[in-house]
Length: 578
Image (tube, rainbow, N blue to C red; front, side, top):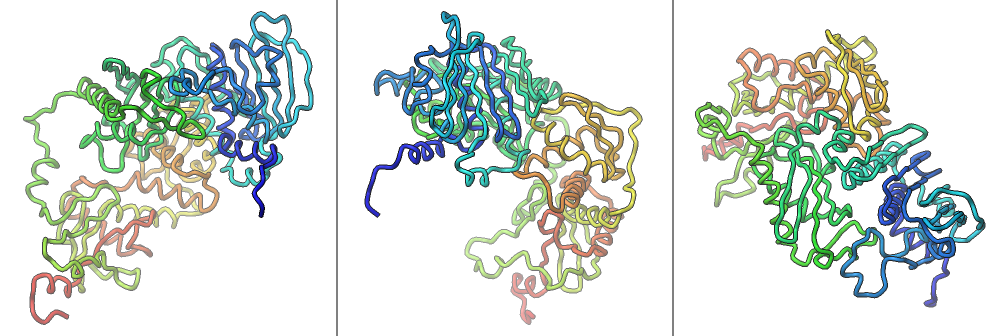
């Protein structure tokens, strides 16, 4: 094919592919334009996960009528005058391509009125072409309506996630900016339901309660650090509150939401040894730094930045977080016995690595030892059934040791109990699940995104021993929980399930009930660190022997490793190894 210049329509759609990845990208660009306009009120309306409609209105400075057409032209902006300005950017937008990119893949209506104008102006652009222009009455500010997103590139629609996921992406995004700009009144309505409404009173703790719920907001630790020209503020979770992923780590740099691996690493390292492996803090940190010390023009969607002195910024983040953790953490009680940290360390053979919840410990290889002799572990028998086992004892309050006719078995007590509970639950399928009514129904709030997820799964939860009902806004009420969870805090049990639900990028459609049950069993199973009596150890192993699939937990992790007699004899150098 000969080299040729692309048609404007094709070039615009390529540019749109970089800027407009999904409906949440449209929300972000329009919301940032409103903030750049000095808005004190921003209202967002979304229909059908943003595919049918994204509408953003504000009370900002407005766009002059004669510049409205120019606003939807490519590379047209009021925020840059020269190339040098790229290295001291103080606005969220600056490239002049967002509106043009959005208009090229949708029907975009732009209505605006500046402060000194008596009347506003309206234009309509469809697929990048101007199709209407007229004068209209409108309050000072701007309204942008984006309809039929990706109507002319249907292939892009196929790459979107489920409606629930796309809605949650929008809620997460608006929630972040609500925290970053507490002086602005935000209102988000999805499918005619108000999801988020902040008051704009410049009280970040108040906004935190609206976004995450009052219970969590009360626990969050305040962060504040001045380091010459670097200012860091925000909130972090105490060590007792964590998540299983990094999704709730949020950084803003000079008012811009960024996803920076270095900043996240600095935060996580500040929690070093304080959180279990695989657990992450909740954080929303706001970094202010002179504009000439940060380059924001390094990513198509402006989601990343580059610092002139990255190490200095990362050290400042670490100091700020560590200072907050130390300030709010009680001093350790040295005279209080701690079995796990003292006795355990002295009695467990260091050749065995302790694994966290759901992991399996593996024997260490001594220096100079042929790796091939032991790196085939864990070794499993060819069938799923277990032989009869004789329980020997418990190691590290996490693993059971048992002897079988063919060697030694090390059993992860948590994973094994998960399997036992899961198969017990599945045998009850179609029957009434034993449940326990609460003496006093308990009401709780969730963040908007989590509330949306839970509401979509209420029917499934209520079929499996829960009785949870929607209570208006982002509130829910728990009346019953499965009997096997009777020892847990009911609200904590539901919150844990919601956290697990949020792990899925798509809603649970196939095998949804089995996956809910697996989550319930994970929460109800005995944990690593829980000491079991001899009778409890034996009962757990007997129950595991009766399982159809005793060698893995419902999530697919192994429940045990097997050390054959032959392997043991080889390791001890005995003759006559079989």
